[in-house]
Image (cartoon, rainbow, N blue to C red; front, side):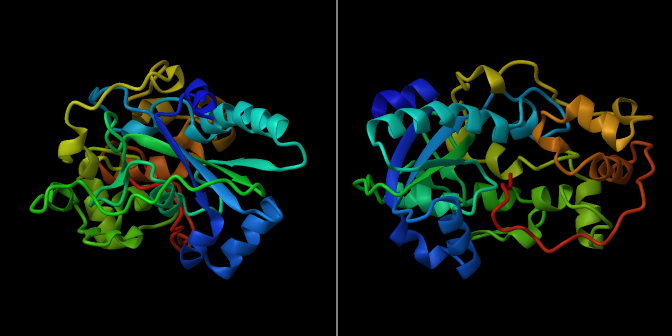
Amino acid sequence: MERLWKAAGAAAWGAAALGGLQPFLSPQGAAAIQALCPGARTVLVAAFPYYAGATPGNLSLYCRGEDYHRVLHRRLAPVCQALAQRHPGHAFVPGADSSPVPELAAAELAGVGFRGRHGLRIVPPYGSYVFLGTVLTDLALPSTGPREGTLCPPNCRACQQACPTGALGEGGCQVTRCLSHWSQEKGDLPPEMAQALGASPTVWGCDRCQTACPHNQGAALSPLPEFREDLIPSLTPQDLAGLSNKAFRRTYGHRAFAWRGIAPLRRNLALQGEGLSPTPQKKPPAPDENRRSG
């Protein structure tokens, strides 16, 4: 299996018994997993590096290349196909971020990387600049973990001190205070978050906890071309001027910053005084705890 994951571009991988994830699953999440993969018993987790260097720009580092949902599904597909050939009669279902699998908990149980105080998995030599992909299967496989705890120095609080909204505590990231989360929401923002976003160097996402992390200093560049080539470091009002939402999706739909449409980006640029009037929007929905922050 090691050769399969290396061929897929994974920097690390592991397996965990699905039963170990029960404390992290709501009844709805558990039902969604069984709907995706009836009789699921194991979750495979793999880390895919995305760091392409710290070129200045106003888009978070994770969303400058091709949309990672597309990339991970494309890279997980041959792994699933090969495993299905090896184990006839068993299902192998890929997932990336939007899956009901609690990826961070699964990675810990599978021994993939170690937990940073910012709540993300750190996978040397790539630091926390990795995406997590999963494969659900009804095949019982031996667990490769867990890897509990952290290698963060006892007195290091660099990520917590760098967070502009105080979202980071000893338990990780409080999503409802995470600026990356709010930069992606539709509608009018809470005043505190609108002010923080107006002062942020990014109009989508927030990298400050990661750029402050000592484990990310000198992080290795991703070998995956989807995250190294054809990058968009920034968006300006001129890039969005005159675009309908349909035209925006046609131009940028293969980027991770496009999934909410053009309205949040217009609003965020306007909050930063970039001269774009935001489109009137509805009240934002409740936070999605499974969405990537950072």
